[in-house]
Length: 385
Image (cartoon, helix red, strand yellow):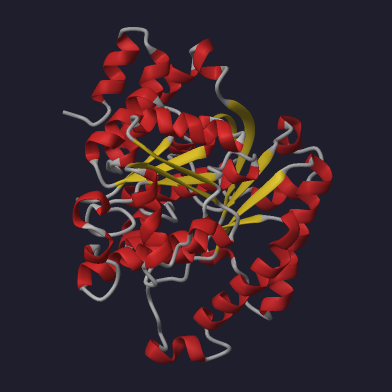
């Protein structure tokens, strides 16, 4: 049985809008590469429905790669659909990214892209001074913006797993790793202000494991710069950056309280008994609050949606000094005994946002399922038990 079976059944019944919601839910479980290739075929069927397309933002995306890219467009289509984008993709010939950008009469410019993805890797970083190399890439970005007026996405360079210099590699300024790290810093500086949007492949490859990301068999056999088993993870990241480029990012994080921001139930246990710091479990809640606070500092709105008496819900913020988050951090605060879907609609109305601008985090699986059913536009964060 596949996680995509519910979406498949809804498509067969002609229920394409619910099928899209089921597709999003299936992707939340991070199915493997083979499952996602099957999901990509379902995405094509969902995209063909007129009612679905009315809810999506169309984007013309050109994929320019220095390596094999044929497996990437279906995955990008799948993850972009889940993010609210309907992609039309032009895939440049193998390894021809520079020629396509430089030639004003290339098929790239005839396609009239709204966004271009430079799917490059560490092998494309030329030797020499990192400053000169950063300028070379920035020059390509500038050509794309001037000629196509498009958003430019590019992979920041993923350092290889091998280190000929061992632990000294990063500290040697003329080493490959030292140059790559310096180059990534310089690219980030030149990308500021909208010159380009960088996909942090070095971080992503570290998260999944560089030995998985850089599987030499895929490179030598098929010039796959990213191993196929982890390619879906890249596609999800690229779709998220693309979504941000077109203003479709979630703008507000809505949080439950009991057993989400603190340990325990304030109405039953009392404020003094709540786990916030001190214990290992309490420290986990404080760490989560720090992460949420960091999101707020970068401009994400925060809101509360809790089944509680309003006074009880506010008391920990007012009386527990361990709380990282304060009442002043929240743009909306809904604490009552109505269902969470109703609360989310009230928050969206108060903040003048669509439901598709909200993300929702709650420890209770039943509450998450209710929101998925009655507010399918909301992104639901699956917290572990």
